[in-house]
Length: 318
Image 1: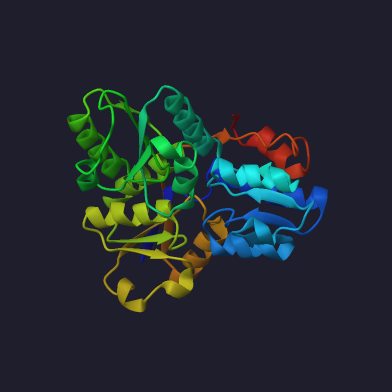
Image 2: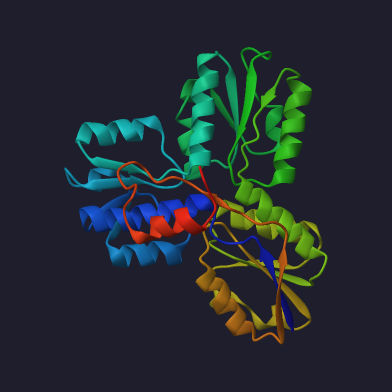
């Protein structure tokens, strides 16, 4: 069996930043630090940070007065930030800067009296945070069929924002349907570079393989989209948390297995899967290089060797 690794794969700049924020906050302020929601959607990462002193919570009532609170990479609605401020908590915002960009777009267009159509999955923490920016003017849709159900007060003032981890193709179809109904639509390009790159790399890889393994959490939106990219190409595709999820019957007819991983998946899990498969050959198929690094929050800038290594050797700082 041959294995071809997709590149890029794994951690994006927003995930690297979020994990570093938790680790550096523990170093600076001591354990425990409290993280609202999973910092990223990967249980391996969450468990690792928990062992170091991070407590993951959904309700701020569980955070002691004066404690350090970190917002996850998915972002939060303004009412959560207000509640934390009223409690006097030390807040560090690990929201991915690309998600923050979507939040700022929502606020900007809301001030211009636009209706804001958010394309995303109901209940996803990123979508909850985006909808919370301008709740009275925001409308959530997930499919093309949802477009016909929209009741927009002014069809001439409509903006479309997207969850950053969606499928490029599916989002394009929804935006096209929105534009047909609302010709004056302003559509923002909000799908993040990492999501796009991983999907396009997986598409290229589909041409070479007869089985795709996507490594990542079942709850991860971008991992599920990667699985769908292969399925849509007619390639058997499975989303697995780790090697223990692999079923022997998947591999019976597989001569060439493609492996990719979501933006929240550590490379350790990829290496574990390769060890499990014991391939005769391992190669990498690179679609593009990524060199984006995001600046840490001001409370943590200049702290720790990890940040110094990022700044010196891992590309453009934004």
